[in-house]
Length: 217
Image (tube, rainbow, N blue to C red; front, side):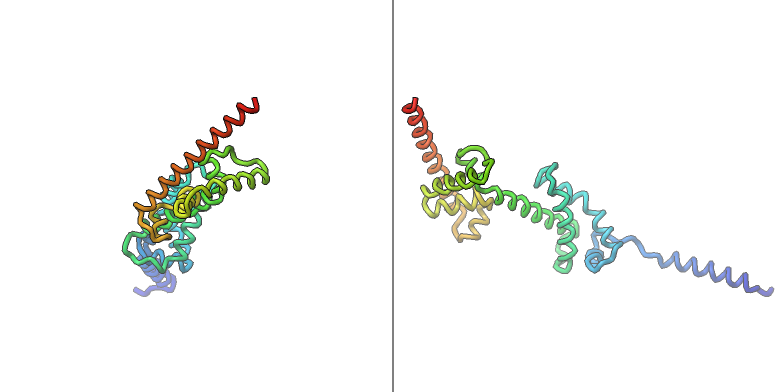
């Protein structure tokens, strides 16, 4: 039986369709380092796979660090994935991709929290030492800073250094140890001494204020 051209073309289409089904690629594995590298190289499918697989966990983690209703959460989440794709080549494969991305999320969230901490450092210091509410005008802000700086001068240089790094700049004792080369136990003792000295100074200040008030009355 002779096959016509139409039948031959139909058979060819069926064979090609079968082959196309056989070579269809699986969805990218979001835990595969190659998927991460491909995403970094601009592969849209891999970018989507990485993002969709990890975004919920990253979002929850960042929100726990910054606060669930913090307006910066979404921005930090986006920065996490940008950092992951930018740094994909540094992924050494010693952990899962999800764990590595969560590490980036931790560092980015802490960076944001510490940046905010440092932006408000003089207001926070003033609140810590009892100098009153946050200033409502630039002149008040300068006055508050002057008061805080004057109060810090009662501390020894060593006490002042650890107090500022811990209570004002937001560093951990381990970070301060790395910065200064001083042991954690020594830093802890200096920090406690600084707090007691400031408490004593504030107590004397309160007494002076009360005495002045009685004289004025």
